[in-house]
Length: 90
Image (cartoon, rainbow, N blue to C red; front, side, top):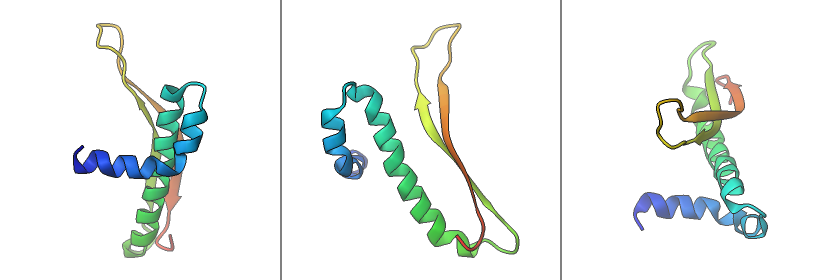
């Protein structure tokens, strides 16, 4: 395991029981990872939002990237799950 894999694994620990009980782990895993990353991004943006000057805003779009096999007629997809706008008060 490299450092990034270890970090992602530790982010998923709170979801271990949910994932263990999931009917389709390959469907539930991206949603669990999204939830963990959403919390991390919210913490980061809230901590740094005070540095945004004036009426500036930070927009955060979150979702799941869906990779598909490469063919002429297909492309990857993005499933948007959240859109949040932060002001300098977090």
